[in-house]
Image (cartoon, rainbow, N blue to C red; front, side, top):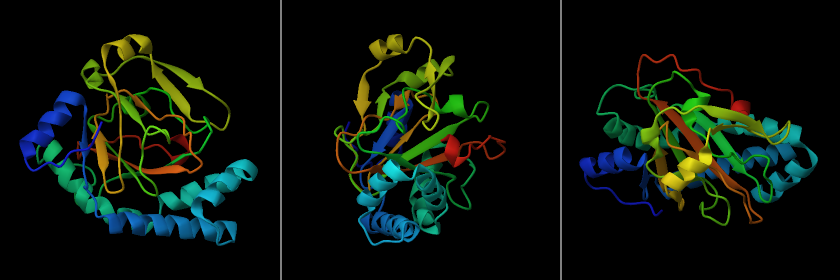
Length: 253
């Protein structure tokens, strides 16, 4: 699935409502993405007390010090440079939310954090799930996802979605966990039926590209076959300004 350049509001809304997602070409200035990446990399160098490449440090921490890797993830989530893309995210959410007030609309989009697509490691990869399962009762959730250091593609485990699956609404799910230090999967019941019903599409995103998807869209991350970490930024913006949605801790994302 290739991102598109949108010049008309109705076209953007049509694709989102029809497919359960919209993939946007060059939503962000690449210099803004580079600034976010540099801030994250400098933070990791400080934590590791060295001047090594970002990917080298990430891989080494994953091997030898998962506690420090977790600490880095928490700190990286709160870096002020992450907020530089708020204005661009808010412009799109404004359209998708029919120009109604939404949480994050005045002060910037609500950020969930970064996710680390570690190379050759299933531990931090999600199975098929719906965001609504993790934030039950939150109402409309716009999920924003974009790469930071390297493009997202099939080789490095980019996320995939079951196109059109959002029309199923909230599905019952089964809870699964690969290990004590892995993500918890809330896999829709009878997922094979949904896989057969809806085509699986893969988010191929260059730096600056972005995908935004519905809270009911079934999606997952995939196995990273490369030697680099596929680090992505993940945001959640709530469409109801009065929502008391339970925002999960970074460790629960």
